[in-house]
Image (cartoon, rainbow, N blue to C red; front, side, top):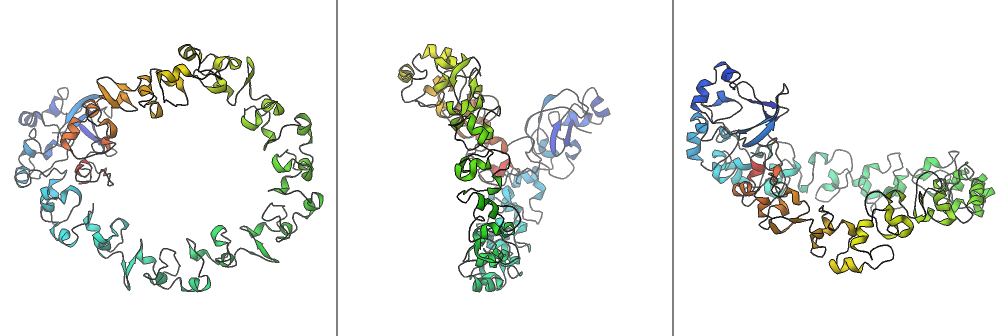
Length: 546
């Protein structure tokens, strides 16, 4: 007897397949099964009554389509160890009698002489049928999802703590019992590591003794990079670190300390700190420019006279108006002082320092068609369908190209230059960037969804739950249990969607309940083994970590 269930990429799905009327109940193979278990829907019917207690919990309504592309439909799946399946055809009766509250996916693991973590190692499961008794006696406060990893000879960082005995001793280095690091094998491996360079770790098993002697005040993340033949710059290129152990020293220029010594004398004039007397004016690369423009101090002297007008310090008389590159620009816009003259008239409104009369309103890029007196930094906002405030909502800009007309009718004094007294009277204390979103019919959330703003002018009020204030009112009662602020008494436990979840996990407080019981992951090994999901209150991620 084959089922109506298949597994694709580890995800349990349902389709109208073998055990259907159209297929003759799998050619008759499932008739006896259906007669005995009419409400038992599992993925492997032949496992029922095979002498092996299965559970493989899959509870809920799943919608999917068949591999052949048949129409999707809904079917409720059950677990093997359920009344509908007569407790796995009787295979689980003894287990249920012994552990009535132990709800795990694989009951046969209980008492298999192997200590399993998670919900298996709990009182209601008899501490994994006694398999974890010795482990718990040795490490009573160690909450390990995989107890077998403790003391397996490999240092696991998750268990490298006092509660787990420093991973059962795997993370303790022989000779340094008080040295607790991520990987003890690095101790004495010939490379000096900063986190291992402590007295408790024997100065990295002796690997850092030479380093500490030569550079006692040098504090870097990777000491082995000091003196490795490459200038690492930053914290390494300091006097305390011997200028990276000499890697950053510049031949012929003992007082020149730069992060890339190879740029000195490479034929291209680089700016500061290379363009200094201590560095021989970049090893001679900048002598020509320095002779022509002795008072020109810029970051990249090679940009002087490169054919492109550079702004800022380049476009000054000391630098020959960028070596002549900016003369034409200065004649056209004599009062325009910007960092990037090439942005003027490039087809995009750059706003701020570019959008003024001296720069020709960014060379025309910031002009608004139809509104010649409208000067704003984002012309595309005019007539975008959304009411923008400030200078946009002004007569010069056609009341934001008409976008603010309806809002201005409601609050006529909220346009540019107005005091917005009418809006403030309705919502005193409501300070939001876009008042037009208040009462727009859509819950904007955030600062709009506040008492001062009338819960976004009523847009964020949940019908039936007047004290429920969430940013996504449509989620309340949508059929999915949402955690956090939705799953509260004020919100009717998410409009009733979380009642079943709360009954099952009354002390499980999470923001995303679907990670606990998502049908794509439930019981197939998708273990979210971090807090708050991996806790006893949340059933060790709804059994996924069992």
